[in-house]
Length: 398
Image (cartoon, rainbow, N blue to C red; front, side, top):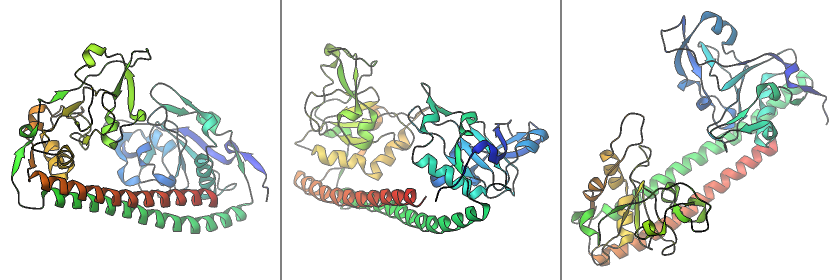
């Protein structure tokens, strides 16, 4: 069935940008400010985490959020991050406004059911229908509200809109439940993997030793230089390569590091890399390099370890450092100023304790770890495939 269409602007009573306000107590009325971070998957708003701010009575009068209001995400977190998500306000019990990176759009209830409009705009975003309206700067991606409200909206009668909403909400609630179950499966899979690895590495009673005592040469920090497209540019890993344990072209960049300086930084298969600086959750993350010899160097924010294979198998050392017990110890040693990424140094890394079973036992554990990781990968891939099917079903239903 083909419905007549109307520009979005004709369906709105109000379209106005958000405000950030002042710290609590510094203006006339204390409110909660809904930010982009409160906009969740599927266009759901989590208002429980809205920020405490204060605004004038006039600002609150004009911009107070009501049930049925739509919030458009006008600016995103990076130049490659799509914007244009839309959230529907369902609860108006508290004093709330939206932040300045969002646009408040108030549908005219005489013309359109806000739930229907929300579902349509969410669908349009999910299929890339708002991509032509988006622009990107060096740091951020934007969408102009003045252009967004020019979008055409299919307009069945109000009764038909409500019938469509009832059908869609029934289907989408089932998909939401399935998605929650899959997310729970993912958490369980992750917890099972971590717990099993912890048991394999630390479970048996065995001696422990400091990391510095099982290395064949001193630890070394890497080198970070500017990007370069010159023919003699040197391939350098990124932190993502260690976070994802993926040593492919995708997680490297070409830099201007001279061949002379790079001479002692080329990676060899079996090298272990540890993030000496990152977010509080990721600092201390480690991975064993399994790429080709002399293919890339490593950046300044990584520390390279080379295991003495006669004492400790590099696979076992990498697994021990990835274990929750060792990683938690490294995170606890990380230091940094407020607002900066915490850092660990070579001394803290070298003093970290790891198990030291006999070499034959290390190799047995490594084989068991490979089996666990293969099973974990199969589980994760199955969960991701199911989530993708759920997303495709959601788009198809809409």
